[in-house]
Image 1: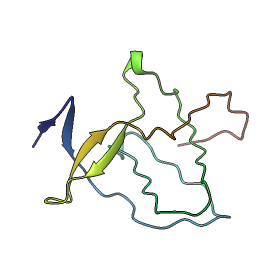
Image 2: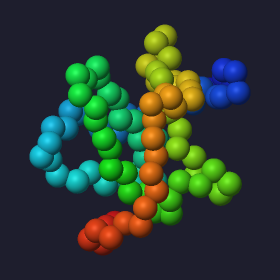
Image 3: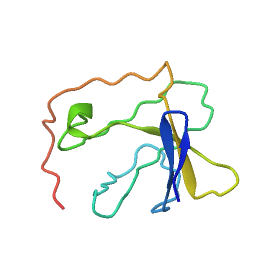
Image 4: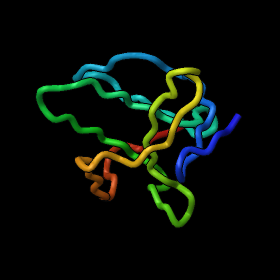
Length: 103
């Protein structure tokens, strides 16, 4: 089931994990073969939050690896509307120098 909303498409979604993570916490690794989309749902916070996301290969719109934002379509809870990122969104690219991430 797909429906076009503006320039974006509503897509079916599959819930893989539903939890709250509080620092300090372990690393969560999501693999593209098992995850269609990764959703980080933010609540209203008093202080700013940051997410450290290591994507290999990195986001690259020209190569089809977009960083996308979605909102759930209330009537279905399985479909998503792709939306523009908020104006407060900032992405900084850098070279990952951490430990190897193995599958």
